[in-house]
Length: 199
Image (cartoon, rainbow, N blue to C red; front, top):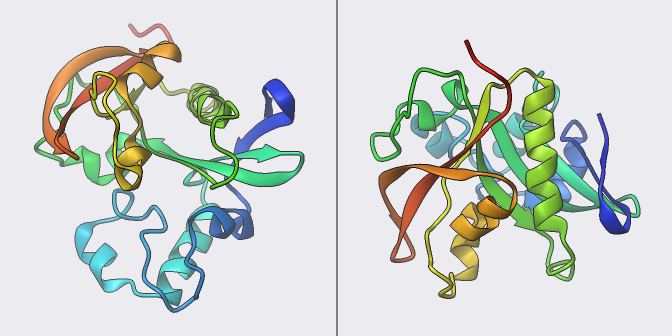
């Protein structure tokens, strides 16, 4: 499903590996970068997958249903990424620092990346909205994010992928819990948005 946003931004499920690679892959195929696998697969597998093997694993995930996230396109070019998936199939399922608010089969939104040169154009907001719509279409009862509560202070660019509390609030999320996690000196909070009425 395509979600259209302002200024020609479209958000689609991440089924095209080549577009994911543009946004997350290393400049050299043999380099070892996250490729947004760190929270998606177990830590043992994550540490063992090197270079091209990581790309192969992501290529495989793009063929899964649901795919590993959503991609924002601007005039047809991939410009942003958001990792969103059922929490039970991520390492957040067992993360002792990020609490479980209740027993709902929630989805997690844990990484937001915008290509350099495309920042401050509304792409981050479009990605969050697109991730929410994607989860809702798949029947998610609620969606969570784990951003930093930076209270307006600057967040180091390498840590900015988790987003900020204020950013999630703009998209209709509310704080549901504190966490034991700290990133870049800021506490992370559990933000949640209800998607469907639950019995």
